[in-house]
Amino acid sequence: MRRLNLFIKRLIDLFGSLVGAIIISPVLIIIALSIKITSKGPIFFKQERLGKDGRIFKILKFRTMVVNAENIGDGLFVKTEQDNRITKIGKLLRASSLDELPQLWNVIVGDMSLVGPRPPVPLHPHKYETYTEFQRKRFEMKPGMTGLTQVTVRNSVHWDERIPVDVEYVEKFNVWLDIKLLFKTIRKVLVRESIYTHSENKKSKSI
Image (cartoon, rainbow, N blue to C red):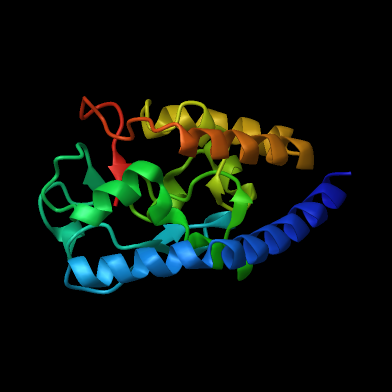
């Protein structure tokens, strides 16, 4: 049954990402032009992330910060929307999560799924080899554009506290759960919520 659910999940990923990209293509073009016109640098931002079974791939996002931002200030993390590395259009994109839309390409090529645990960067907060056996369960499925963690705790707790939620998703996975999470994600995108931390030890949105 799980194998069947995974097969259907991939069909949904392909159909959903392809149709979604076509439908929102005017939005993608407007965002791309806005980035190019309002700030120097490329339209897209690529970054290495840990995928299924610890395999490294490059995630794709709309660029929301100045070039080389990961080597300036707080590095990989953004703790407040007042971070001066964020571009003007970038603030809007990050607040609405529209910067994540290019990941539809990651879904199409099979690096990601529409639903799954978010992929961390390879060296932070842990290397793949240093995750415990329990924690590595979150890597048994492809990372997702959204997921159980994103629609529940999001960035409100430390990374290690998010892992059990990711593992819960992996263990309880079925197609209906994915569909529910997709609808919950749409609702959360429409209702703006803070994505930044008020404490260094709590949450922070990565670049």
